[in-house]
Length: 402
Image (cartoon, rainbow, N blue to C red; front, side, top):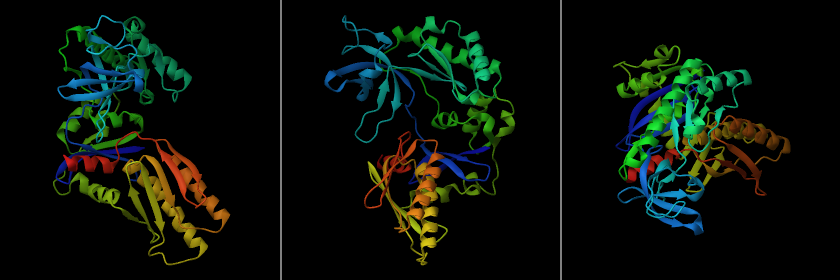
């Protein structure tokens, strides 16, 4: 069962919302620091096409004065126009269209937008680039058929109105009626957006995306959640609003209120943040790992340090413990891209095989795609990890610079 903590903390004079996902034994499976400021991710804007660059198959659009965004032309096949300025067919410079933000600005890079619109519900996602009624492949065929039928009851005109519905995995244990109502709700939101599109003022935000912590929670099947604890009134209220349709939601969503000890202190949040921002991480065996996180590459060095035993079994033990901790650090720090690991050298091929198989098992538990690539001639282990969220380091550096 999953346990979730939602609280707030201060780091480098900036306030963050903390999202921490644990298993029933208190081991952290996911950890996110979410900056306490308005995010534009998933917001939909009435934007203007400023420049089209066929050479790079992209366009640049503005969603506000002096707020430029990158739009791939692959994501601009059938835009919703708020004002078709050009008489030419297709997307043209000067046209005003609806775009949705899918990536925040990162350093010198503009935010990324798409004309493929998505509206998020509690159990479903509406899309305007596919008119199918789809159900998560993780659900069995019988349950999927019932959920598809439930959605069709409330969205019979989905093809005519130009949208599709995807039922998420977390609908597995939700009543069909609640899923049907959820689908109807997102369809109504979408239809209102489309209906009002021709009358929208340039740069207006026509849809506000969910809070970051709610989007993270959408990846979790609510039936697998044992409890959610928060000490923030606004978060508590939004959780009850969002998950009120679920059975036992009031019992699972807990308002923590203990003046003797804070929620962050109770679950060691500050200590965890210190651990995840430290260059050196100590292992129980006395060894340590050094994490050097660069912009496109992360280098991790495993050292025996205080573990002075030099026997082959001792080295294997240190490497095995390091492999488990490295997988944890990659996950909780949200490190992505190329990762190079320099384990302590071992002569035994059997020991090397044991280590690599263990490392593969540990990274397999990662919800984000993490892939073992190869071992170089110098004995360095290469991994890659898909970028889904900004790394903890990037988040802290960004707010520190602002």
